[in-house]
Length: 193
Image 1 (cartoon, one colour):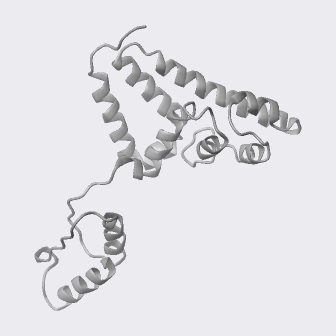
Image 2 (image 1 turned 30 degrees about the vertical axis):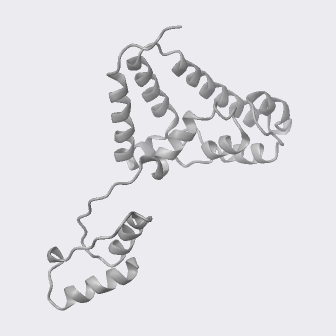
Image 3 (image 1 turned 60 degrees about the horizontal axis):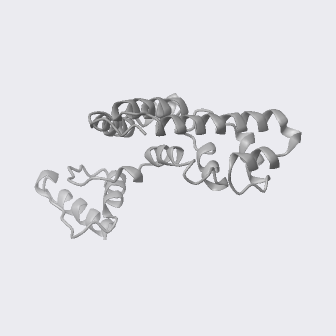
């Protein structure tokens, strides 16, 4: 449908109708947003659009979400792999993937310590240390005390574990995440238990 619409727009323009006088509307989203952007870009059709994309549809935001949720899933193998294999991960090491995939680990840092191959002792220890650091940062987030403290610790967490290159390439998405944290920082004091 989108390809047909693009073809018709190109025909209208070829026959003298300026792009600014052409409008495209559709009912519901039905995942057209991404397809419209993709096909219009391929066909060099200028586009002034009025739709948004949920933040988690952006790969960088999904990585940040996965990073924050490692502990929720008890450092499950697939979740760990999704973080350590990500091009956005600041501490990425290719050797870690093989270690985890061949380990038989299902979840938990303790399992990683017990089951990772001893032959790659240095890589194993670096991976374990990194997972423990991530867990410690998540624990700090849970103890933040105030929303402002939580937001600041969350920002530190994001900057520590996302690569500088990813931060530059995905600056717009990062800015949206930071904006959300800034709003959280304005909330009242949390319950100190």
